Length: 179
Image (cartoon, rainbow, N blue to C red; front, side):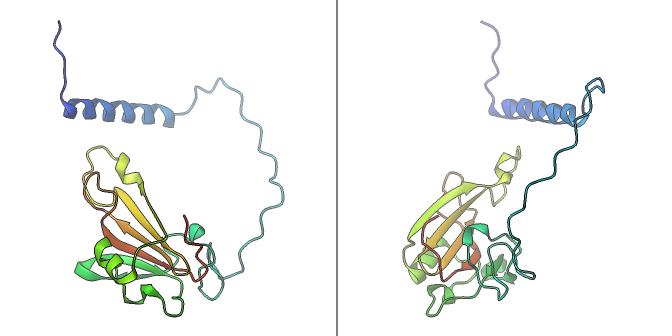
């Protein structure tokens, strides 16, 4: 039988070369022999715009009305525990469990202060697709609290999608509690 290469590093390198070559070919465009595409028709009536001065998922007073539509950068950037930088969006509800939370806290510290979430889940970020990237923020972990808002955590160990450090607090008194 011939020599077989079983090294994961070699497989990663080959995958990276193929991805880069494919991206390079796609960016060069066609050969020019294809006819030009017709201009796109004008779009139908657009959805009503948010009131002036408000951001997606928020009202003009800075309250979050839809946590799923809030975008990063909509809140204020803060420095937290151990030098962690994060964001706080919206205004806290009365008697909010989130009032004592600080950016940089671990999931255990947060659940000790705020209790167990109504719903939770994890998802990967774009950094997970970068070959040979072993830094933080490859995945996020989200906790949702009914009537309070959402908490977003970044990092955690490889394959551990239920830990990390708090990087984003979204205050929403109307939060349904489910993602």
